[in-house]
Picture (cartoon, rainbow, N blue to C red):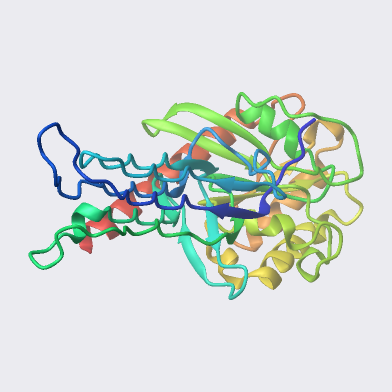
Length: 341
């Protein structure tokens, strides 16, 4: 099983420029041919490009030096060297490129695109370039520009439409499977999942809806307990939060307060995101009075919770339709704001 990697320090080096050539024209019956040394080619660039096919940074080797190709040297007869091949490193959408020395954010892949992380060295000029009226036969050329090794911190903040948030064993993985076509590993562990699972609701909103099962939050995660901040950052970019409440939990009436408190401790902005509350595992209760009272208590707080059973899929269709409705509303609101600008 591949380890989910959402942060990696990477070393890169752009290609050196090719050297300019020292050469003189040689041809039968022409005794004094002029300089004809060509320029060296520029070195290749190192380019990060966002790929929608990638979900993590697991493919990047932190101890490996990633190099672009050097530029080719110039040749005689005014032949210039070829540019060195660029090195393109694919990263998932949501990746931030950070200067590890200063912490400065250099680029944020919130949408598909590319970022030149290291520019290739300039090719050196050949001796033909230096010919002047007073200097007819220059016997020198420029070396290619050498590049320096650079370090970048790549940090992934997952981009998803819906983020499932809840305590370990709340049934988020089962709910993800019921809502989408995802096939997460599901087991009755009291420990938090070690990597986000991703599912897709197809053919809606004219594009797939991405649903992410954020690893279970433990109380104190915002202070670094348990997995701590390592996964809370993935909630920052979801458009809608789905709080999954485990009805079998001994402190079920406190779950939402604790979850909201953990998010607020990490970033108060998270509580401004649209959110829905799911009461999971309704199939475990024969007496429905407790459930009715719990639903009523949430409604007193101005919330409209969705009772579901992720395991039997009772109530899941209704929840899915509400997700679609909410995301359509958010998309229209976002389009209006963009138009006003």
